Image 1 (cartoon, rainbow, N blue to C red):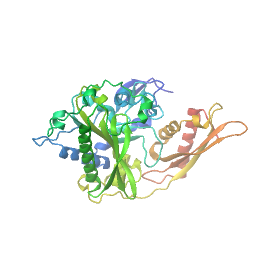
Image 2: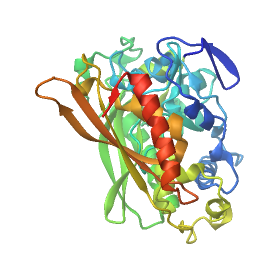
Image 3: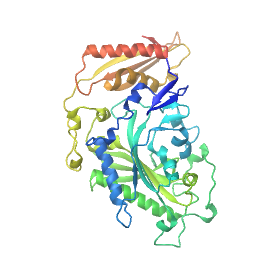
Amino acid sequence: PMCDTISVCNRNYPTDSWTNITPNILSYQGRNIYMKKNHPLSILRQQIVNYFYKTFVNPKGNAIFSVFDNLAPVVTPEQNFDQLLIPKDHPSRSKSDCYYVNEKHLLRAHTTAHQVDLLKSGLDNYLIVGDVYRRDEINATHFPVFHQIDAVRTLHRDKLFKNNPELEIFETNFKTSPTSFLPIKSSLKCIDQTKQPCHTMEAVKLMEHELKTVLVRLAQTLFGKDIEYRWVDSYFPFTQPSWELEVYWKGEWLELLGSGIMRNEILEAAGIGNTIGWAFGVGLERLAMVLFEIPDIRLFWSNDSGFLNQFKEEDFGKHMKYKPISIYPQCANDLSFWLPDNMGVDDFVGNDFNDVVRDVAGDIVEQVSLIDKFKHPKTGKSSLCFRIVYRHMEKTLTQNEVNEIHSKITTTVEKRFNVKIR
Ligand code: PHE
C-alpha cells in the first residue's frame, strides 16, 4: 500500500501517480560516498576539482571556479528538463527512466539540472558534484545511483576578446534572439555543428579551443600524458555545437565526457544573454572503474575495509589498482510468469521489475536479464522469464539463503504485477 507522503532529504512530499522512488533507492541518498576520504570516487573528485583550481586563477593567483558539492538531489522537471530545452516529449522524462518523488519533483538525472539556478545566482565559473539517479538495467556497469561533475564557464566580450577588442560575440541580426523556449522536435535532426546562428564564428572558435584544451589536459592529468584521444560530434539539447571526448584505453575507445557551447537561450533565461559559455559533464564511476580497474559498480557502495583500504588520496598517479579480495561464487535463479490476459510481452516495464528485485534483495543482485519472451499459440497468453544472478560482495551465499530471497522476490512480483508464476 502506498503512503500518502514520502520523506526525501528530510522533507515530506505528497505522493501521486508519478511516485516511483523505492525504499532501496532512498537508502543510498545521503551516503555521500563521493565525499568520503580515500574513497575512489572522492579521489577522482579531488583530482578534477584541483585541476580546475590550478588551471583557472585570477591575476592575484586565486582560483576562480566555485565548487558545489552538497546541493540536494530533489529537483523539479523544470530544472532537470525544461530549463535545459529538453523537449516535452523526450523519452528521458518518462517514469520508466527517472525516479519521481511526485509529478512536481524528481531525483535529478544529471547535475546539469542546477545550471540555470547557479547562473541566475551570478556564478560565471563553477563545478557541481553530486549524486544522480536513473532507472536502468542491472549489471556490472549500471547502478541506479551514480555521480557526476558538471562545469560551466561563461565569458563577457571584454574577457573573451581582450586581445582583439574589435571582435564581437554576437552577429548583429541575432543580438537578442528571443527564440521559442523549446525547440521543435523535427528541427533537432538537422543541427548546425558549426555554431548557433546568434554567435560569431570568432567567438565560438575561441571558446571551442579553450574548452577542448582544458578537457584534453584534464584527460592527461587523469590517464597520463601519453593518452590517445579523439573528439566526436555529439548532440545535447542544452549545448550547440556539442562534442564527446573519447580516450583509447586497453584497446577500446571509451566515452569520457559530454561537452559543448551553451545554448544562448539558456544564458538569456538566466539574465546573462550577453555572454557566451561552455559546459561539460563527466560521470565519476565510469572513470574510476577504468582508472582503478574496479570490475563491479556495486563495489563503490561497499563498507568492506578490504576494498576501501586499497585507495589513498596521495597515491594517485602511482600504481593504484583494485585487487580482488577473493571471488565469491555467483548463483543464478530464473523466474518465469504469465502476464495478465490483457498484457503483451512488450507492455511489461522491465525497470519496474528491476526495482522490485532491488527492493527485496538489495545489492546482492549482480544482474537481472530477460532471457525469454513467449506467447502461447493457443491461449494467447504471454510469458516472461527473468534470470537473476546473485552474488554477495563480501561472502559466499548459500543456496538456502538465495532460495529464500528468490522466493520473496517471487511472491512480491506475483502480487505487485498480478502475474501467475509458472
Ligand atoms: N548532462 C549530460 C549527461 O548527463 C552531460 C553534459 C553536461 C553535456 C553539460 C554537455 C554539457 O550526459
